[in-house]
Image 1 (cartoon, rainbow, N blue to C red):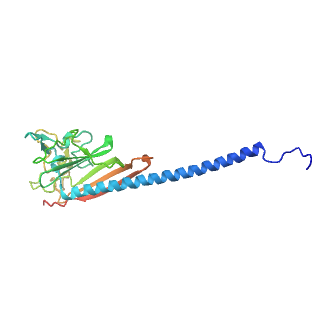
Image 2 (image 1 turned 45 degrees about the vertical axis):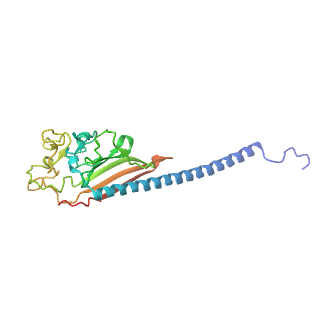
Image 3 (image 1 turned 120 degrees about the vertical axis):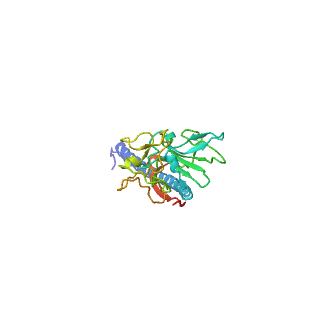
Length: 267
């Protein structure tokens, strides 16, 4: 209309509203894209970590299948030759932290030995979230595998951090024991501990007089009051929790578990 004083077009308020809506829409699209991208990256990290961890589990399984559980290690009797003929204790008593000698509980060290006497130790270094291995072949390549010996090397894939690694060993006594049956009044009297037992009737791996726990420490007192050495093939159950390294690694945590059986029959 001629003489209309109201200009045609958008007012300042309308412009601000439109820009606000447009900005929110852009922000929403960017957020959705970012979340989708991060989700894909987390999934990729998880799949990579899971694949690498499974390869490691396969290696551990093969090690258990082809070797024996080194029960002497858990009784405080395992030794190594330092190359000069000196025999030095390198058993469970040399490791700090939780009691690695009492197999009634899960341990963080897997001790294996093969037919040639070669000893392999897998140790979970909780402080560094790392899985380490040390191999000692007394007759060929003697090596000190004690705690903090510096001879452990990492077997952890770069894509993985271990937040938990535990080894459950069953039976807790060497089923190859052929000695006499030992009378007992309770299960503790048949159990091996590192440096102390709840009521004092258990055996100590670091006892200098006994020189370690007896071979018949099975952790079980039978109904006929004898320390019963089980007639069972040794198995090792490995329970671990992995965390993928990389973007938002704390959100990529996967529990894994497997059981392997030693295929060496001593009975």
